[in-house]
Amino acid sequence: MKSKSFFMIAGLAMMVFAAGCGKQPVEEITSAKSAVEALVAEGADKYAKEELKIANDDLSAAMAEVKAQDEKTFKNYDKAKELLAKAKTTADTVKADVPAKKEQAKIAAASAQEAAKTAVEEAKSLLAKAPKGKGTQADIEAMKADVAGLEQALAEVQALIDGGDYNAATEKANPIKDKAAELSAQIKEAMQKVAKVSKGGKKK
Image 1 (tube, rainbow, N blue to C red):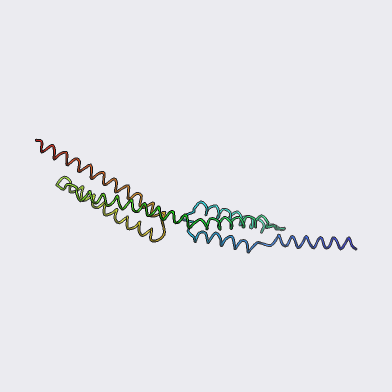
Image 2 (image 1 turned 90 degrees about the horizontal axis):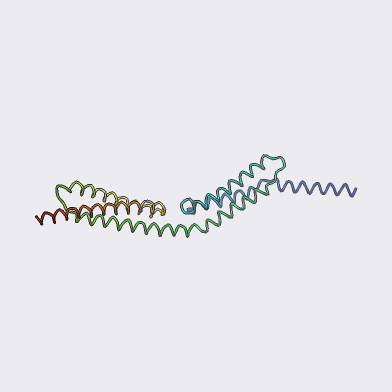
């Protein structure tokens, strides 16, 4: 009897243990998903893309394990719980770092915007001094249109900064600076050519 009772108790304990392991970790799933969603809401899709990918990959691996266990007769979600915990930890850790990354991006955007603005102002100033005449009028008008376009683009940079999209603002500001510098170089070259022609004419 004692032996029979022992086996019954042991069997009952195993069933309880199996039931515990075989229950889908709903709470852990919800917690991990919420952590990743909070990470996205914090702006990780803009300022911590690689880290967000890692968190999403961890979550995907966890959910794949959950699905694999769902399809088994004797389920064991221990590995799934470990993966879900990893996904949550990764998301929580990255989320704590996002504000600093965002601030760095903000500073970089402001710097790129200022550099672009300075370059556009220089091109505009040089254009105002450019020699005007029949041979240069068409070129000057074209350059004026280019400068006007760059000024409009600068306004778009400001709009991106105001909207908190600092990486996009930097990406837009840098080409503006380059184009403005290119225009300035063209204007200076044209001014030098005119100056040489004028000197040559005076010598005659």
